[in-house]
Image 1: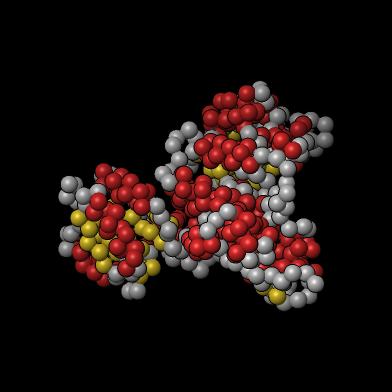
Image 2: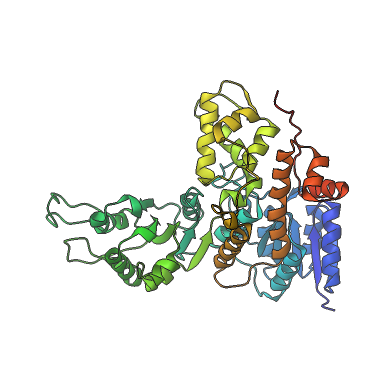
Length: 483
């Protein structure tokens, strides 16, 4: 038996029960309460070896307690948990001194592992405190497990200047993540300068990055500042760094090593003070193996990797994204619109090759071009084309990618995102859920919401299907046959 006492505060009795059971099985003594006042009474009385607290409670905010706890008992670590799963919540928890932030619903094994680490740690972080930012616009949208991991990484980087490499398909929001890393960092009052390597002619990249002196080359009539100079004191975001030519890579590496550079045509070195965040949709390790990207530069910029999931990997975020884009459109003077449940479900079944950018463009187009206040499924169908096709060929039939290959590619990306370390526990059930939910949703669409036909199609017992629909939080929409 461990003997340590864990103080748990959450106004949800069910949460208190399952947390108590999980921690008690590990040998911990657990005391629970449903309010902040009792928690503070215990802490101020010297009780407990660790605090696990919800953020929102009837008589206060758990985040507001963290600086007080850290000031009174610096050795007492605090784990914050919340169903308000936003980037701001994760950042606030970290900045106010939480040892860790766990978004709800959380994996109990992850909770136990976090409790073990917190008890072994000798200190709980910096209780600097921040102003409440609940009313600030959210820089990133999404409550899916994949986005929660992105939020937690961003939160951990708020007090560092480490170089970050953001990877992900086009349209996933890599610049938004870079901007969030800047806005929540110690450099937030400095400039944020973004440059897209793919949009600059190769022969002008060095001039764009480092600037040039007057007369450095034909047409250089005046001195011009480069992006490094413009970003001094802040953050330089190098988008699509995989498109940077080798000669520019060599010069960039030298800047990162020596923290100084010279302008094109210049002689005097210029000291630089900025943070580098890079992004790419390309596989840089493959480019390294092909001799198209410097290996030493890759390791310099890839200190902390962040992989952004494709929209098809986080379909549960689509309703929140749509509502956000509808609000943006209204703020820009476009009419207020809403979507029916059937229309929203159809959006959640689309493949979204253009990711979040494609969804944003579609929503703005729907608002601008369609007159009805409530957008129905037929409008979505007219914009997206045919419903999902259940008759797609596999590789054996010629023409498509097999399901096995698609799943293998997804898992390879997932393991790569963890940089060779083991992913968090619960991977098996998570992957099953990611496959099972869209399969049932698409089957329901094919049968127009008929659960009897869907159960027969899937080879499931009717009661089993109903339980899966409930457990996976699937919305069933019955649609009449055409005509």
